[in-house]
Amino acid sequence: MQEFKSEQLPYFIDNLKLQKFSGAASIQVKVSPQGQLRERTVTFYEGCATYAGAGLMTARELAVLLGRSFKLQVMASAIQLANKKMPHPDSIRDYLDLFVRLDLFQWQDVKTFMETKLLSNLEQLIPYEGTISFAPDAPFDLYYSQSQPGFSWSDLRPVYDQRQQQWAALKPVIPSFEAIPQVLKSDQADAVVAKHLQQWVDGQNAIADIATAIEKDQLKLAQLYYKWAKKGLITCGSSAQDPVEISNDLERPIVLSVDDSSVVQTMIKRAISDRYQVVLANNAVDALNILNRQKVSLMLLDVTMPDIDGLELCRTIRSIGKFRDLPVIMLTAKDGMFNKIKGQMAGSTYYLTKPIEREKMLEVIDKYVLKTVKF
Image (tube, rainbow, N blue to C red; front, side):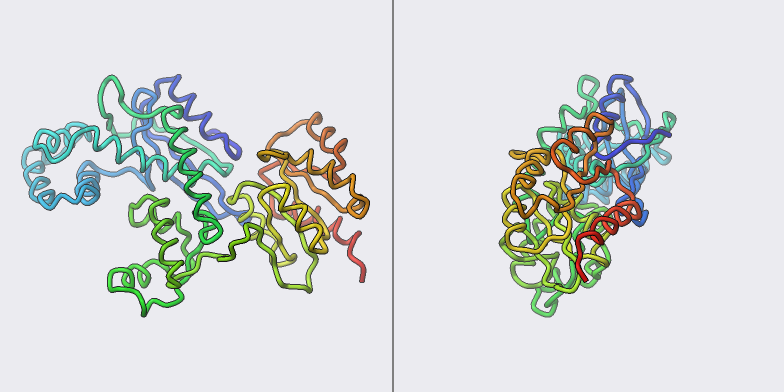
C-alpha cells in the first residue's frame, strides 16, 4: 500500500504506465476532515487504465451495464446466448468480444464509454489524499486492442481539463460533485423525475455518490440537476449569481477562504462552519472586494492560484494599512522550509501544508482569531 497527497494520483497512474502494470488498483481517499472515506477500483492492462468503478464487475454485470448504456433492447437475449456459449466466462475480453461479433457494439464504443467512466471516477479521487494498493492477479482482463489497450494519464488529461471547465460553468448553482442536492418541489416534477428525486435525493447523498450508485457520469448528472435547480425542483447550495459566497450570520467571526478549488472550499466550510462564518472567494479580486465590504477576522489563503497567486495577494494586503494586522494563514500542498520562508516574507501569519487535519486548522484559526476579536 502506498500513500499519496492531494492531486498526486495522476503521477501514480503515469508510473503504472511505465511499469506496464496489469491488474487492479484499490484507491481509498479521505473526503472530509471527519474521516469520511471513498473507495474506487481502477483496472490496468499493460500499464493502461481500462475501467473504474466502486468495485470489480463480472463479465455479465459489465455486459448488462453496456447494454443499458447503449440502450440495446436485444441485450438480454444476447446475454442468454453468450451464457450458453460461455457458462463460466473467465475472460472479460472474450465475453464482450461475443457481442462485438454479434455487431451489437464495437470495441471503440466500449473504449469511449470507459473513458467517461474512468474520468468520472478519477474526478472523485484526485482532489484528496489517500492510499493505493495493487492486485496484479485480479481476474479482470479488459482491454480494447493490443496496440491501444486503454488510457494513460496523458490521454485522459485533456478531457479531464475540459470537464473541469464544464464543472465551473455550473457554479454557483452546483458548487461541485460533493454538493448534496435537496428536494424543493417534487410535486411539480414529471413522473420520471419525481421517482428519481424520491429514490436518490434525500439531502444526505452527494452528487458523486448518487452518480456512482446509478452508474451515471457525475458531470452529466450534475448538468441534469442544474436544469432541475433552475426550475426550482431542487437546490444544491447557493443560487446567487455572485461567485463569492457571503454568510449573513453576524454573531460569529468571519473567516475568508481564498482558493480556486471548489473541492477544497467545500472541505474547509464543512470543517469550520459550525464555529465561524465562512466566506468564500476563488480569486484575488473577489477576495479584496470582500475584505473591503466585510469585517474579516482571519483569511485562509491558497498559495497556488491562477492569475494572482497567494503570495502576491498577501503582499498586496500587507501594503494596505488597515489589513497589516489581519491574520493570514497560507495553505499549500508544497512543503519545506523554503516555501515557508517565502510565505513569511510575503507577510503570512502562519503556514499550513495540505492536506490539513480539521483539529489542526481549528487550533490555528482559534489562536489567531482570539487575538483580533474584541469582546
